[in-house]
Length: 495
Image 1 (cartoon, one colour):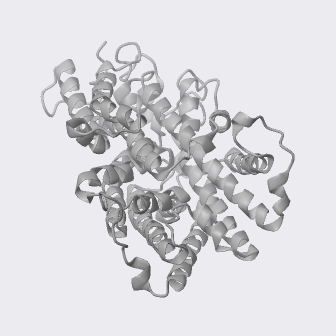
Image 2 (cartoon, helix red, strand yellow):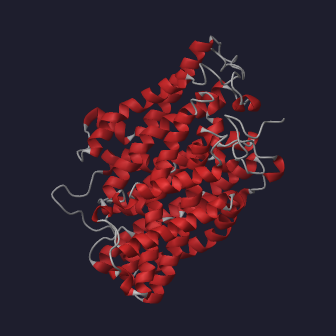
Image 3 (cartoon, rainbow, N blue to C red):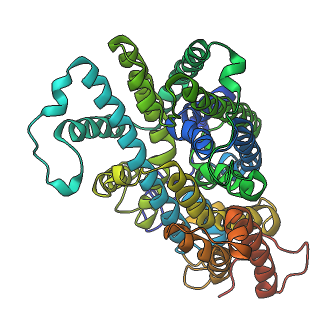
């Protein structure tokens, strides 16, 4: 199969990966997930729930169940990447059309830009605290930024330093990303274990560390049954982004066995472990300091001792770097490249992502645990869940795993639909998102919706996924006039 390198729909970064470049074994895939999962947002996913009054058991259970659930769509969407060597934006052309695929790709890319900015701010903040332990004068450098930016000079310099580290590694290509993930993962596990041991020792005993304090306040501890859907949905949405763009990595896997085993080993266990560390350590801070500290950067800075701060902040920098590059740069870089492959390469797409990450002032987005979990995670989960449902339904139900790869890069082929757009997929996406909009608007206003809309929003990813998948399958069946079992790979060419 010979495909043109540079066209309106193809460039060297979007073309199928050649068999001799599919070298990632199960450990490379597992290391990818270990490196991405061990990061500050994973820690704060569970610690934030504890900070909101959940027991650590409920918080960890929500995270574990969420990651077991999201592993299924991740593994399913990985299949096409491994089989055909194609990235997410190209796979999305099958259900959405060769031009319509830009809609889910850009949605995924913009969410990743938000995450890139947040993670870059976290990494820059860790570098700032590291320098502050060595040279306190960094906090009193002459102010060069306007007040609306909201950072002092030292904070901005450290943010840009971490930004430059991300860009340098990405511009060196996918092999440098594989190296970083493979060798960084064991070190990151050691950092998490050390933090847990510290909290254990300072608490006096494991029983004291894990004892849930009495509920306080007029309403007591939140009724977990009423908000468990929100916790579970936030845990699923946490990696709901990668459930879409995982073909960007699985296309490099040696086999389906490698991608399935690697992800099963690397994702649920690591998330469970680090979420437990986050919840348990946050629980212990109430005993140690008299108040809960959910932010690990603030906690490590409070522990004290220049050597401890230097080691811990260095660990946080590595942890954030591995997650940011793999989860938040590769996907939007491919998404932006997919808009005009003949003009925008992967590296140029990465630079667009990096620049957006600066101008969005991400330190203003990283507010509090409630906003992080119940607005940001659930909000974009409501947006991306329907996309995952449509893609999985198309590949496994409509096409039975068969794609015409050449037509994914060709106009007037199988995936042309109506001038490059499949309006059935677009309509299913809109309808899949619609039921969650009232709850999202209420969350933005700081007054969570109650009743039916509140319940739907708490389960937004699941509602959108199932509704959009069902509507897509029914719509494709009606429009193509096919009977069950007669789909075939050519069913996309109604014009």
